[in-house]
Length: 81
Image (cartoon, rainbow, N blue to C red; front, side, top):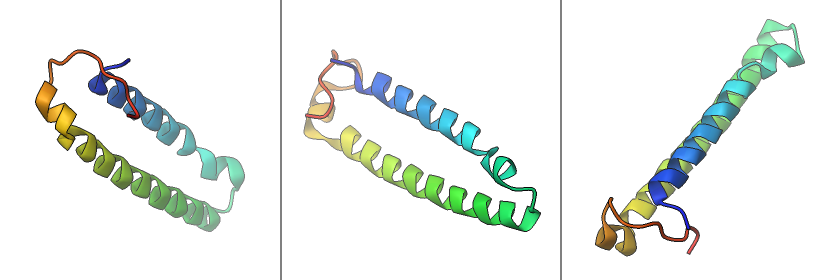
């Protein structure tokens, strides 16, 4: 059992780490600046889609009946149920 806020913070930290690590990928792949730009654009598109989906799902969790009933100071509850 884990509190929703704790789970969300963990996911945000992991996504932040992934974003930071992937920022250097284009330079690791090629010295061609035009190709780097293509890779950067593709990575940014992927990260934006992931962020949009995460935001959408985060809202769904926050708006779920159990979240509204228990409030922010609720005890931990299982995730994925």
